Length: 69
Image (spheres, rainbow, N blue to C red):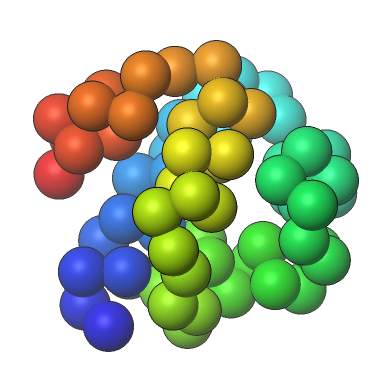
């Protein structure tokens, strides 16, 4: 789960820099707000397609997320 925690922190940082709230992100990737919070907090395991949806919602390329790792 440590990998998901680190990834969640990166996603949260990018989201906040872009001024997007959790509710908007959850809606854009088609999950509940509580599920989205679990993703950012590293308490959820999710698949690659969800990560692609997150990158699309943040309007970034997927490699940008991993470059911050």
